[in-house]
Length: 314
Image 1 (cartoon, rainbow, N blue to C red):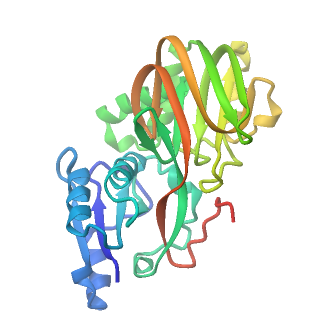
Image 2 (image 1 turned 45 degrees about the vertical axis):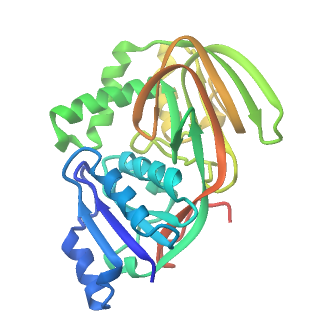
């Protein structure tokens, strides 16, 4: 059996799952497999990243899996550790125990139970490279990142808000609404270069289809098709903004002339002033953002044949 590290994130928010260390220990002890499993509860900043690095070097060149029990931010951290240290032999899995749990929506956890952890399956998925960082789900910029920034402010004051913080973030961000002059140079699925510039409210470069605690801007996105879905919203009359937000949330892009979507391989976004952006919830600022798909670059571990992957290419 492979070696497995479970990282139980202390930063995780409210979730439908409440899996503790003793639950995991119990199922592996019953099968006399406890020697193959390590479990940590994170207790300080970067604890999960440090534990992941130590685990990777302890079992260098051996097949192993790191399973994150947390949210998209924790998942992103560990994906970067794996990619940088031993991506050939280390796979990544997820028990969605965060606030947004957006990447988990690429899979079905409807029938998930702790016993499924005894039956692990693997397949390759894509990643996004953003400047010098790796992303697993979505790179976004503009209004939606402002919403995220405001949501974090609410969560810092009251962690029990959970997903309600994103709704409050939308309301607060509307008071600071602005448009950015952006230049795009992108390469489509046939590697044809396309250039355009305009005033934009927001833009998202999607590997997965969901982000922002349930927004579904790219319903056709698949995490193993070797493509990214670029979705963007141009400047529009303020009266139409509520309608656009609803369409953006539910993936109704084809019904709005202010929203568009292109399947691409890579690209660059530039601005004369710093762009507020985030990758998997980690906020940053930059005048230039370079991104590309990293096809089949990470082994994803899922649980049991009952957990059907609903957004994969095949």
